[in-house]
Image 1 (cartoon, rainbow, N blue to C red):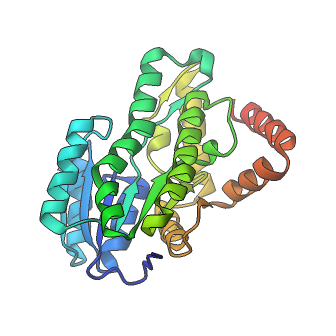
Image 2: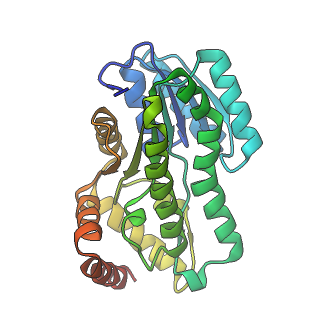
Length: 275
């Protein structure tokens, strides 16, 4: 089933990590298009702000404070959503975190957090919702990865690893769910001006200076979460397997497929510039 997002009246949309950034804008866009929303985030204040925004536009929405890395919490979120609204038509596994730094500077605790949220959070979302979607025979799953999941970045070692896992998981799941008429898209946004640059842990070197430089670069780039959300929904309409969003993500995707050695050299140069 190809889900068309222009009119989501009567559709149930689930968004994790809906308390800010791309997740919030996806909720706002879907709500304006008539969707019934089930939202979660571990940030209660941010989640409440998103709920206020979508309800102000007339959307029906409920939210739960959930840590996606916790399988039990996600199972409860899934059960509650289905009981309240029914089986989702669109599941967006958006929640994610970043650690900025090379692999040698990334701690074991960092690895635990990165894989717990970025990989197992997606797995828990799939486990909570997708069996019912497959049984019904229709719907779409969006797993938000990263351009760093297309082209490894030495300044984002652990993050790159986690997002490569999301892309691979998504492509495998897409093939598995095709007979059930459930589409799957791995979204790779690129440089989007969200709070992740300010909220991430920085490892190695002058962390404060690097954080300020990164935030400034993303702000100067000016690609907003609202613009990213609109293009993510277009990717759903087109049933894309892998969806780069910002222009640099498209370049990274193409280079990683047709010229891997050149892509690796480019990644090394970009990492030097970012230092």
